[in-house]
Structures are given as structure tokens and as C-alpha cells.
Image (cartoon, rainbow, N blue to C red; front, top):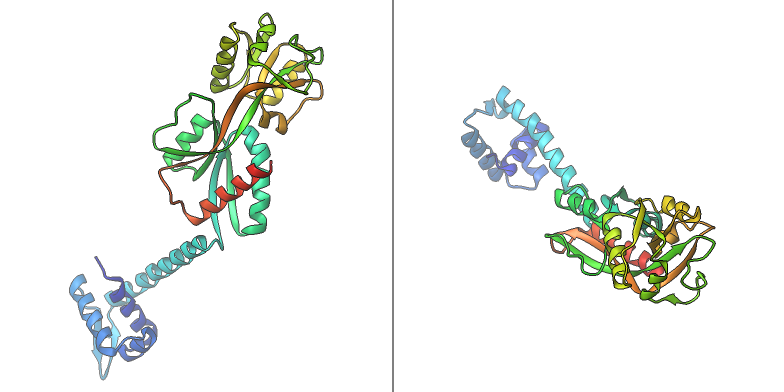
Length: 302
């Protein structure tokens, strides 16, 4: 393998035309440059320099290696500059996965904070539910993910998650009320209050949300009659507003979009954890940590 210091010496001779000038440009002594050139010839098995009178010139092999050396050293310098920029947060690009309601609420607020604190830091966003986000993290396709988990749901191996906040769950009904009280937003609905809706049709969401809905209804003493399933919270609210059924939705989904013809009521003791997830253990690169800090701040201000 070619030593970069020796390659640098050859490139300097190519640029300046002499060993002494190369030594001066590199802030080396002339014997040091001569030593690097001799070692480079020994390592490559090529004659790279020829003596011409009192000076030297590069052979064709030396010319070819010097031109490639300029490219290699230029790429290395560029890589060092890019790494320094990312480390010092002058620039960088972070890839974030987020579930839809977080992408519509927390992420825009975090982007606004980043734009003020780190204007040259770019953020790429991919919408993904937690299982897909975990796969993206493990594959290295994203650097960070906003995920959620319901009580009792285990973390994926290799994924490190920290809770940002607990997102309350709401019973969502049509304008005619829910049969379990006035259907308004004041006060909480006890978990067993869901039993009053045992004969209603239910609309559910993603697989994780469906599992939590079944658990809540089971605790209230009944098995819900699932009429429709959709992970689009806008479509679910439209179905509820149209009288198709009732549902349970998290607070972020209702913050992202609230249909004017639905009623919501918090379910006592029911929530999900909204989390910041990454693959492996800290520390994280400075650019990724800056995005994480912006998301934590956005979560606090929500």
C-alpha cells in the first residue's frame, strides 16, 4: 500500500519542479523528501525520477502516479473538509424516518428550529410506521426515527429508543354522540366506559393500533366489531364523521388533522409512547444529535 506522505512528496515535486522547492512547500527538510521518494520507488517497484544535469524530472511512470496522486489527495482533503463541516455543524445531511402524524406535527417544528440554529444542516424525511422505520435504521437507510409504542410492546433488537412524551388516546365519535356520556371534550372517559359502545361498529388503524384497540375493549369486557381498517387518520375521521363507526385515535393524529364533524374524548390511562429511535448505542454524530435535540425541543413545545 502506498504511503500517503510519500505520494504527497511526489505530487509536490511534480508541482514545484524540484526536491528543494517541494521540501519548502511541505515544510520538510530536503533529506526527508528525498527519503520519501526513494521509499516510494521501492514500494512501487518503479523508476519515478530521473536526474537531468543538476536537477530531476519525473519519468512517465512518475507522471502517471503524480497525476493520480493529485486526485487522491484532493479527494482526501475534500473528505476531511466535509467531515469537519459535519462535526462542527457547518453543513451535513441527516435522514429521518417518522410516522405520518409525527411528520405532520413534530417534524415541521423541528425543521424550523434547525433552520435558525443550523441553517446549513439538511434534513431528508421519509414517512414510515415504526416496524418499517426499524428496518430502515438497521439497514442504514436513515440515521434517526420518530416511532411510537403501546404498553407492553417490545423494542426491536439493536434499536435504542428514548421516550419524548406520552401521547394520550381519544375515543372519536360522530356528531350524534358516543352513547357513553355527552361525547364532548371535557373530562376523561373511564376505560370501562367503552363498554357502552360494544354494539357499535369500530374502525381501526395500523396493526399496532389495532392490537391496542382490542386490548382496551377487552379490558372493558367486550370484543369490538371491526368494520373497517385504515392507517390513514384523515380517512378514518371521515368514516367516523359519516356515521360508519367509532374509533380510538392518538392525540398527535388529532392535532395533525381534526375533522369538524367528530367528537373526541380522552380515555383515562390510555396512551402510547412517542420515541426517538436510532440504531446502536450513543454517541451519535454531531449532525444527528442536532436533529435529535430539535425534535426533543419540538416535543417539549407541542
